[in-house]
Image (cartoon, rainbow, N blue to C red):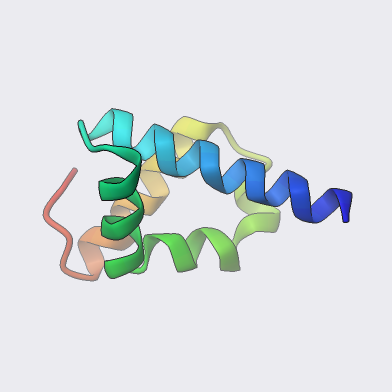
Length: 73
């Protein structure tokens, strides 16, 4: 249960940090990441991504989103 809480907290921080980086609200950030597969990337790659900095995670999500039609970053 603790691992699940930690991963959820990590996702929330990453979504908010993504929003702050690109001047989006948390809701807009979540919607953008969900639509362009950045959120799924973070979930699928959690084991590796959570060992990196939040800035690296934001950058990686932005790259995934660009590959999937996103226009930010």
